[in-house]
Amino acid sequence: MKISCSLLFLLALLLAPFSFAQSPAKPDPWAGLRFLAGSWEARTAGGTAGAEAIGVYSFEWELAGHLLARHSTGSACKGPQDFDCLHRDLLYIYPEGPAGALQAIYFDNEGHVIHYSVSAPQPGTAIFLSDPAQPGPQFRLRYQLAEGTMTGQFALRMPGQTDFHSYLEWSGRQK
Image (cartoon, rainbow, N blue to C red; front, side):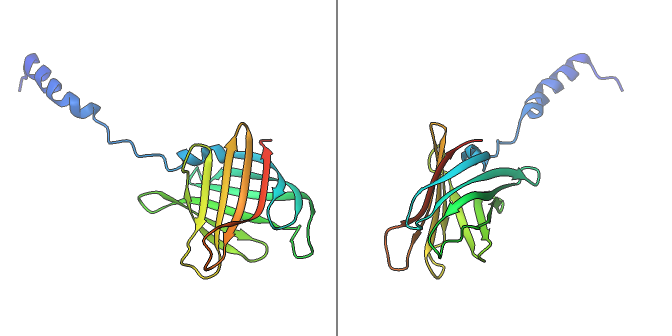
């Protein structure tokens, strides 16, 4: 069977839009958190914990970029008797379900486990917020990058209260 050149040209012209059509771009769930990646120095700057600490924390991509993990280590600490200067913790950030809403789970050497929803309300800011419906205090963890300095705050809101109160604050630059 012989097909004419004009028929082939017409067929190619008709099919061309389909060959260049692309599925809509899926939004990057990590776009608002990419500023966290790297190793950061940390020096406590306030809060009610009453601790003075120096350390390093890092946000690293793991599992082929499907997880962002924060690891922290302290190098010097002085605090009240009830403050754990040997504190160690892990924070894993991951997209939940097909919509890709970011969630996080926190573990520490004191046995605490906190589940967070994660948002990036503006460039250079990340907010981790625990579910207020869970028993006990609600927790908020905030990171903000401005002019090369990362600041952080861990705050809590006790049941029946309306305001969060800072427990620990820190700041530092990327290593």
